[in-house]
Every structure is written in structure tokens, then in C-alpha cells.
Image (cartoon, rainbow over all chains, first blue to last red; front, side, top):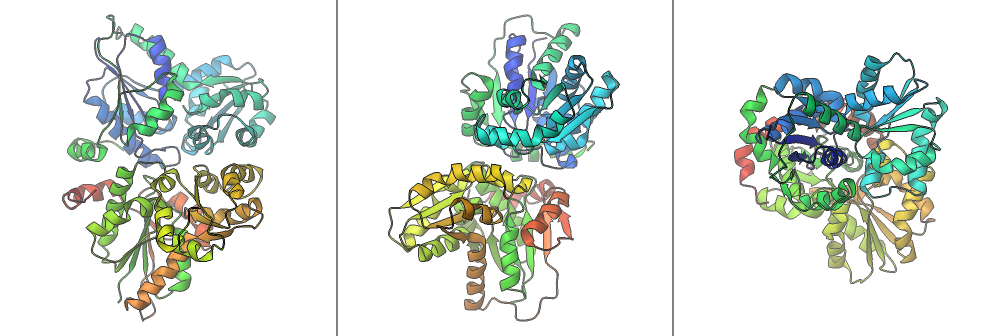
Length: 280
Length: 280
């Protein structure tokens, strides 16, 4: 099916999912929207996150996408059902693939989850893990400072190590053997996390697992693009693209050149009738 | 003049200004708007910050305010002229009062400024300091991690100290004797900053200086409310008020009970005609 795949995130973190998708599905055209005008989502309320998610998805719908990826853990945790009620197309979030992989990988059935405050408060990872295996030992930790640390580029060093120690001590004490990186910024801290956990935890990168799930769906549903892709991937953001371009290459592992700013408020006003009926 | 004073900030930090205003002008009714749905401003673009500032001010205009305080350093640095073009009432930002106080207090005319990336990149503090005194020695440092540290409640301890050391080393080496806390979150880090700078710098709290400036204007222009105030202060936010109430008391030094959430997107849609003509 020669239609693009749509992906949204609160900002830049979703590019870790894009990186994997490009590897696993090189024939697919990707259209990415990063809501950099309203980033971060992870410290905001459930109601607001649902509203933002519907608006972000609505933006991508105009490109006639065949599948929607919610690359933001916070939006996946809190808004995936709302999105499915509202939009009649396959929607893949990052929570379920991450939870499934962790359930498979854990040997002692003691699983840790780290994420933004909203993701952790939602309890969504625990719900999905318990759909896979029976366990009383899921330990969660909100880590609000990790996103700013990554965006500052402090991926290692003493401050990052001490911050991780503070956040991870309880999970280490609970003898967790598998740790879900429940925020798309966190894979950039992999080395530091492994240092602090002394390599004793299997780290689950939800972005990577999501790309695998998308590939499975593509093949199963006969959704994949069989021809080599003709159109370039498109990147849209709701604020000035400069910072996105600069930090984005760190996430994507390659240069990001063509990023376009859209006037998102104008888009919202033009689509206010459609959006008004959304089931938030 | 029995009208209220309007104050806006990107979120919660402006409450440090409110705290001072309540001390210095106890007869005035204050109406506060914290744009918690779109916080932070300090990492976003100039164009977006100007647009947000106009929208925030427009919201406060409906209360027939007599004076507008831009309690956000980022918006003061980048949007104060735009606001003055658009709204015909006295507008006070936090930058000028902070710069003026620093210029008066510095003995060696070596002044440091710390703030969000957008505030620092704007160069607004340096411009205002140079209107007061002649100096080649203004040193600025963007500190993107300090706001998340304050919001996490880590006001002291090793991580905060090491982060401050990293940000302040250059200013210490430059022999700065006066340091402007160019973000309304930073006064909460005062003790830790004094520890790191070993008490060698006079700290200028822009919020406190702004309250003094507002008091001066009130008296000079005969704007002050002579009666004891009858109406309670009002607090509005654009996201769920829970977090604002919780952290807000830390800033205000007293309990914040009545905080109301407004549907800001709805407000923007209803006022799109007025806002369309704003000179951004």
C-alpha cells in the first residue's frame, strides 16, 4: 500500500523510533510531527495530553497515512484508547511493544519501568506487562530530570551518574533484571544506565520494539510498500526547526536537513469543528 | 484606582513576584495567569514566545487590569516591546528592574546573568545594564537544567551543587561581583548558589526588584488602590491546577487554594480575530 506512515511525538525523542523504522522498513515513507511548541507532555495533565494527541494525529491525517505511530510514551500511556475511538486506522503506541519485550526477556519476573511523571502515574506499562505474565514485581520510577539532561547533551559524567543513581537505587534494591526505558529520550543514556546498574539489567528500548511491531503488522496486514520509496520522509514541527535539527541528528544518527515549521495554532483554528467532537 | 493588576508567567515561577507584591502592595488585587499548558517558554523560539505573550496578555485584559506585569524573564526579554505596541497600558517586565539593581549594586562593574537559553540568547539583560552603566564585563550563562531541578524540588544536595558549579565556573573565574537571577525559578536556589559562589557575589532577585518598580509606578502615577482590597486574588492556569497548587505554595510561601483551570484553546479560538492583528 503506497501510503505513508505517520508518527508523532511531543518533540524530538520519537526520532529514536524513526531511526529503527528506517532500518527495518526502508521502503516506507515516514511523515513525522514533533509538537515542539508544547513540549514536554510528560509533566502535564491527562486531559491535556489526550487533547494534544488528538490534535497531533489530526494533523497527520491530512497526508492520508495508512498507520499511525504514537512515538511518545506519555501520549501512548494516556491517549491510545482515545485515539483509537477517534481515528479508524491501525494505531501503534510504544507502551505495548516495550511491555511485551520486557515480559519475554525477564527471567526473575521482576521488571522496572522508568519514564516521565505522567507515564509512570498512568500505570500503563504495568497493565500491559500483566497482560503478558503474572507478576507482583513491577517497580516504577518517574525521572523528570532525564529529559532535560539529554536535551542539554549531558549523556554521561558525574551529574548524570548521580541523578541516575538517585532514580535507580530502589529498582536496583528490588533486584529487577529487566528495565523498560519508558521514554524515547532515554536510549541516549543507555551507557550511563548500564554503568549505574552494573550491567545487571536487560534494557528494553521501547522505540526499537515498536519498530519491530510495526514491521510485523505491515507484513501480516499486507500493508507494506513493495516498491522502493519515491518520496522523501517529511519532518514537521510546531516551533522553529533550528533546535530540532541540531539535537535531532543526535537521535537519528544522521543529518536532518529538511524540517518544516507549521503554524499549529492556525491549523487548530481551521480544524476546530472536526476537533470539537473528539472524545476526550 | 480600584482595578486589579495582571501578571502572567509561563507557569509557576512568577509567584516569586506575587509574593513580593503581596508584601509591598497589600491593598492591590492581583490576577495571575500561568500558562502551564505550554510551559516552558525558555527553550522555545522568539516568534513563539512573542505569540504566547500576546495571547497571555489578551487573557488578562478581560479583567480590566490597570497594569500588566510580565513575570516571566523569557517573555520580558523577547516580547516586552511587542506587548507595548499592542496593549495601551503600563507594562512592567522583570528584566529592566533586575538590570537596574545589578548596575547599582556592582562595585567592580563585572556582572553575571543566568537564565533560560532564550533569555540569555536575547541579550536583553546586557542591553538594559549598559543603559545604566558603562561596562565591557557582562557575562551570561544559560542554565537549562535549573528549572527542572527546582520543579523536582532538589533545591540543595550534591547534584544541584555540581550542576551549579558547572554553570557558574566561568562567572566565578571572571570575578563577577553581582549575579542576576534571570529566571523566577532561581531565587529558590539562592542558598545553593551562595554556597557555590562562596558568598562572593551579590545576588539580584529580579522578581523582588520588579515588585519595587511596580510600587514606585503606583505611587508616581497615582495608580494605587487606597482602600483595603475587597476582592480575592485570582489564579488561572491553562492546565490542571493540581501541580501548580502543590509546587506553588513553595514559591509563594503560603497555601494556594483557589486556582482555576481555563480552556485556553477555546479562549484563543474565541479571540482569534483580535489576536490575528497582533504585531509579532
